[in-house]
Amino acid sequence: MNDLQSVALGDETADLVITGGRVCLPEKGEFQSRDVVVVDDRVAALPEDADPVVGEETQVITASNRVVAPGFVDAHTHLDLHQTFENAYHYVVEGGTTTVVSEVTGYGPAFGAEGVEQFLAATSYLPVRVRAVVPPQPLLDTFEPPRDEGEDAEALVDLLSDDRVVGVGETDWIHAVGRDTPAERLYERADAEDKTVSGHAAGCSGEKLSAFATIIDDDHEAISGEDVIERVENGIHAIGRYGSIRDDMEAIGEAYPHVPTAELSLSTDGMWPRELIGEGYMDVVVRRAIEEGVEPADAIRMATLNPARHFGLAEEGVGSLSPGSVADIVLIDDLDTVNVTTVVSGGEVVYNKGESKVAPRTHEYPDRFYDSVNVSTDPEQFRVPADAANDDGEIRAVEYRGGLLSGETVVSPPEEDGELVADPEEDLLKATLLDRHPKGDGTGFTGFVTGLGLDSGAVATSVVWETTGVLAVGTNDEDVRTAVSHVEEMGGGWAVVESGEVVAELPTRVAGVCSDLEVEETAKLYDAVESALRRLGAEGDRPMLAVQTMTFPGVPQLKFSFSGYADIMHREIVGLKP
Image (tube, rainbow, N blue to C red; front, side, top):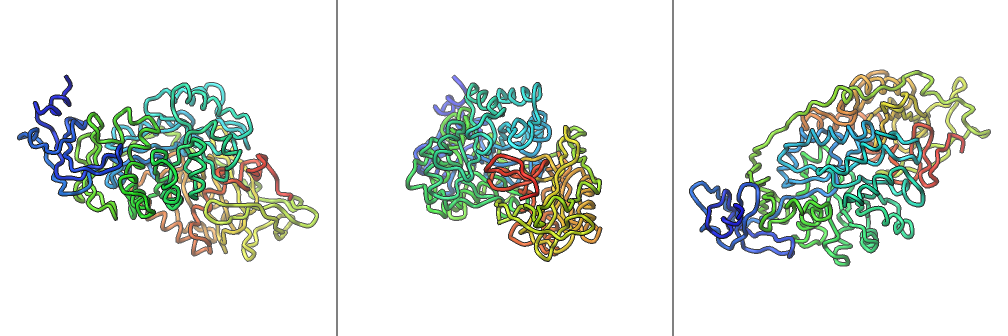
């Protein structure tokens, strides 16, 4: 007989008891007046009265009619971008989140299997359970040759046997629908290991979504109720999101009456330092779902039991308060605000009434993680010869349209000394993407972009999505080169330059994509970079988001690659001539 049974039967006393609360039973979608009895790191029982198992050594928390729920589970996020998680996790815990499922699209594309292994090492032994998905990007060949082949590819595939890896990370549908891809090795291994494959189905519907559904198990890109319903109809687990990228909770609210609650989960899709500090984490996601009409018990289920079951974490006892479950417990005093007052992780109280019992931690990464930005600053790399245009002086350019969206346009740049140059008065900027992958040569492609609105200066960053590169955008070559050089000197990050001077910076020296500063300092530097961009004339609500997504193929149209523009819908590289 195990220790849980003896306490459940009343023969032994508990280690922790939570009394007087309204316990959320996600399996039933309702609240009941129960006590929660904990032994070591597990729930032993949910009696109506736990007094018989309260002993002298039992810790008792009086819930006083507060909601008692399982610890929240973030079904989809990106913990290896912007900020190292070990320096920021305490904010996540304080918001009631005790489990996260994370992509590794920051470390993985640059370092392959080692990137995933370092991510897992850095997030081990935290009072929040971190599970990873294997990034497919090193095996994709749609616009550039795959980075990982042979033994490197095999090492990536073998990660799917790791207990802390729950599946394959998001695959943009454009890479997989209607074509063969080396990433199929990952999908086949995931199937053999009974693990999931995540999709990125933005812009994918109808017969294409049906085809994509033969590969993927979940998707977080639905932006309308109809999108959510279509995914569920195709057997795809729909993951709603609220975070630094988007707020799609309205879509969840619209679909909620029409699909089974069990087919919906919630996520942040990334909560960046400023929002993490200023708004919260999965607590605010649950609140937004409730605001959109989801019943509170169902909203909690979408943030606990549903993602746990989908990713196989329920077998570990995650997502429930049923006897035998992991004692990850959240106390909430107001379901309108989802105000978390107490958090128990693995049977230990880690946050209570504004006092955190946990603190930031550090991890020492391999030296090459701190020296991962080596690119060309040769002036020739940033020049565009006049003969790149057609006979009418026209060239192809990326048109930024807001959010993650960009398209194709045709422009006529001015010519100076046989070169095509930016024309900020006409909102026409030059943009260069340089290859900083360890297997790359540091060179890249220079093109043009409209819609960003810089009047002067330049910005460069190594925090570009799904691409191991440095992207620079500016009004003149000298400021662009200065910005790129400063990003390289920092080992990664953001640099804003005006008249040859760096006016704002944010170092992200871990793999070129993560700050290892205190999260509060990172948030301040993000504000400084964004403010500097606005002073230079940047338009739109999210100028930093606009820049870093210029490489992202997940939202189809025209993006930047190292070899030219990536025409996403036609799956080909195109040049400057229209």
